[in-house]
Length: 206
Image (tube, rainbow, N blue to C red; front, side, top):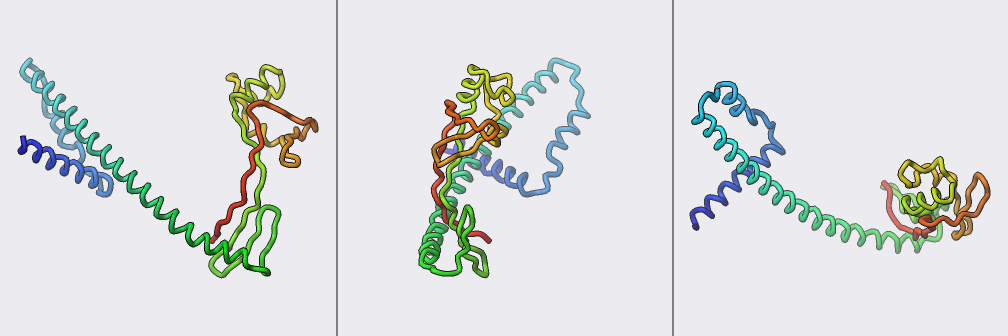
């Protein structure tokens, strides 16, 4: 039993190396031997047919093993990516916090714009994005309401789902709590469409 486990481990390592070679190597000659064999071999008896069936069985097993090892490697890589992402965010946020403290201590040199406040430096810029309001839509709920009420039909597909990207262009937020149809001036209160507040965000730009 121990020998089998050792053999399995060795075969998994061989498969893993094969996967790495496929990912980063030139990928040539994969399957060429099988193709040559198919061209040479002719099945003309039950014995040969039985042999071919056994060959397919082995090929299926090899693929399943390959798939299992590959999926395991993918899972490990995804976990490593997530670890690095947390590390990256942690380190980045440390410097962002220090830069924001410096940004807030500045009394001169900031450029205030409509949506943000910027402070330019030789290697980039410190940016404070102002809080804003934006529309949020549940397309199915809003589409069902519009269909039932016989309005905004040009924004509804066959399935009662609102074409939000187009419909949103004619809407406007007033005073942070009212949705206006800019074409009619009508105040809208549509189920599935609501206003959400996006808080200010500090970031850097290079």
